[in-house]
Amino acid sequence: MPDLSGTVASGLAEYYEMVAEPVHKWVDPIAQEHLRRRPHPYGNSAGHLLLHLTGKLNYYIGARIAQTGYVRDRDREFNETQQKPKEQVLQEFDRTIAMVVATLRRQSPEDWMIAYSAEREPTAKNHFTIFLRCAGHAYHHVGQIIFLSKELAPETRKKATSS
Image (cartoon, rainbow, N blue to C red; front, top):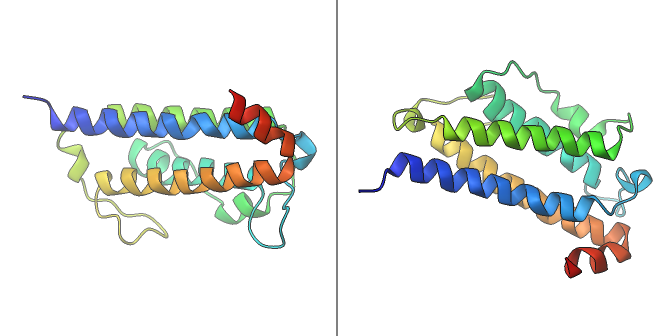
């Protein structure tokens, strides 16, 4: 009989890894000077969305489940003015995904139902729910990053769709 806990952990871990793939595919071609550009008067930049995903996952999963000690500054995720190199932002995102995957793989059958609470997250009552909600939220922002990449660099579409 398959182990449900292991199946859930593996499935979610693979999903988070799958989320990271298009991030690189679509952010790599964006020029450093365009990473924080907002091509529309509404919405966010690709760079700010990456900071947001990194911050959200580091807080909701890292600090609250893995006990990493991460302290979140959500406003900075959307308003950061310091232009970190794109490679650094992507490396921080990759380390965060690796932390999430490692935390998922450490979940025991009992861990999924451990009570959960966090600032700005009143409805996730257990570990399973926060892992699931964060996965969906991350993929939502990946879609926005793809759209922004196409807006910022039309040649990006050619490079990304041909690979």
